[in-house]
Length: 197
Image (cartoon, rainbow, N blue to C red; front, side, top):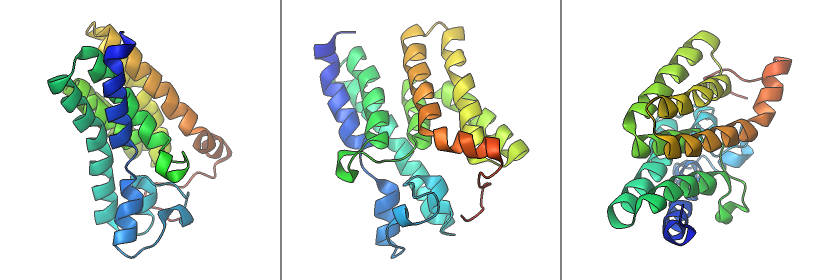
């Protein structure tokens, strides 16, 4: 990858990815700072703990679109290196937004949006494994981890190696961002889907 070609995409992705839609939507709805509720995370799962399914759905869609839009813009106006860098930038921007002192979300929705922008069938693979795991275990975090572990294989199996390596890196970051959830899953204290903390 040519870093000079990739840099514009990385910056574009980061700027879009760092928009904290969960925080903005809950504040606009008069709920207050989502970081004071539940897991104190700005993502859709924590927004759902407010009881507002509409806001949670809006957060999920907008957080996903950050990744998709960044990739599509980079692909159309820049180049292949910038396209991949935009995906990485959007994901990192969501995890570490400069506006929130680098304390962002855990990246699942933006990860899904990046999959849509890179190769849409991979988003279908992720969704199938997430939904199946959620139905079976009722844990959003476990479902995300299972789906993220499987999805890179779809790229490697179709010989999309550059995308596969990128998505594998994003999957590793998903696991790192969920380290507290993993500990709670192991101890049996993790909140289930729809359960308020």
